[in-house]
Image 1: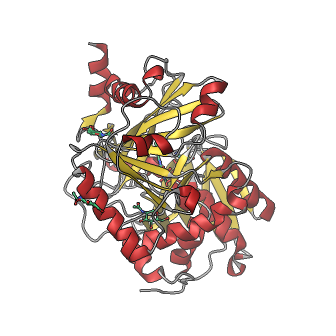
Image 2: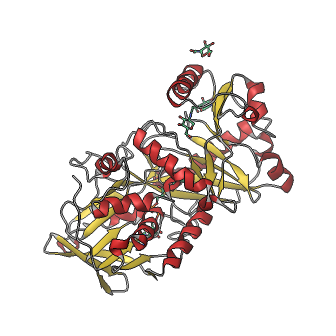
Length: 452
Ligand SMILES: Cc1cc2nc3c(=O)[nH]c(=O)nc-3n(C[C@H](O)[C@H](O)[C@H](O)COP(=O)(O)OP(=O)(O)OC[C@H]3O[C@@H](n4cnc5c(N)ncnc54)[C@H](O)[C@@H]3O)c2cc1C
Ligand SMILES: *[C@@H]1O[C@H](CO)[C@@H](O)[C@H](O)[C@H]1NC(C)=O
Ligand SMILES: *[C@@H]1O[C@H](CO)[C@@H](O)[C@H](O)[C@H]1NC(C)=O
Ligand SMILES: *[C@@H]1O[C@H](CO)[C@@H](O)[C@H](O)[C@H]1NC(C)=O
């Protein structure tokens, strides 16, 4: 139920990713918050290199099976197509789904179903791009070669390109948003690390205790710490960090020119994808079940109790500069490359990275007041798909926060994002549409395996 809230005199936002920075921007612009003091803190210098919102690229793909997300994504894309995506921050180069007859989702059958849906329900024009087609069907290898240039590997048997998708230069767009927030003059930025929330009487949060020992109080605390959030609240069965693999390789200028205007390529059966190269760097990655990193910590809501819980938390190059993608993961990227771009199959990765999703059981985000603690609002649970909403996500978050919907899907979205009434029994058994890789991988086990 929508309910107007009192305006807090002070707001403390913790975490400066898509969710936290977006919230700061929307709050700074709303008239009713004009007297609110807003502080945004992050443990790392902006842009935080291990945050999931910071990377060379993120796919902007508005086709969700769910109508509310799909509408929201189309709204966001309007901004990507304008100022937000200017200066190379957004490129609408299409997304190409490639299939084999043998693919799990049954090759052509799947293709036909997706296409029926677009033609009949959405009225998107099917045809060649040069002729204004928004969807181009690829019926054989020669069709595929016509849209994927300069790749002489085995590109599959059929597929389609959706020319209405693109990709964003993720770090650049975050910097752009940061500048917009700075220009409002309304937000105080601090680089400092949350140690724990300040709980009072077991029913209120009064702000944050920092690792320096300093206490920062606030009328409203907004926790937006991405995949690190389970360190500060007991989110077992609600949200959990899963490590995803990214590999990068350097290209020559000739290769960049040859491949640079291709659509992104995706195999929905194994989650592997290649985003078109930019600045002579090619990225190969996997949208997978990911690695869990089980970590035993003091119960975040009762630190003095001596009680401990085990939750999956991120481990990144900030914690361990030598941390790289386990062999299992680099092998998957190599195999993918060998198939599509055999001439690059042996090119060393210049850099690999594990980037952390904040997964929820059904991939809906978690954006709500905490059911138990007054003064605490949580916004997280990106589940690997929140980046594309960067231009507008803050507005929707503040809708929930203020209890005033400004979006026609407000009520529907609020319901999806609300604090779950029931916890899942286990973390990391989430099932969301399509994900690749094995289920149940544990980071340390995979890292050890690599050394044997
Ligand atoms: C590999 C990968 C690929 C993805 N691809 C896509 C895609 O193609 N399309 C798409 O739409 N989405 C994609 N996503 C999802 C999207 O990037 C995320 O949903 C989104 O960035 C999540 O933002 P966030 O604000 O929750 O987290 P983050 O960006 O991680 O922000 C959390 C912030 O909290 C800070 N923090 C943590 N602990 C503390 C502390 N103790 N004190 C202070 N600050 C702290 C961190 O430094 C960080 O800056 C992808 C994600 C990953 C990892
Ligand atoms: C292509 O993208 C549009 C949104 O831009 C989406 O509605 C449609 O379902 C997509 N089509 C396919 C076949 O993926
Ligand atoms: C897919 O559609 C094409 C024509 O649109 C048809 O010839 C083909 O038999 C269909 N394939 C399947 C598996 O349904
Ligand atoms: C996609 O991945 C599946 C599973 O690994 C594989 O069998 C199939 O050949 C791949 N298809 C393409 C077109 O790469």
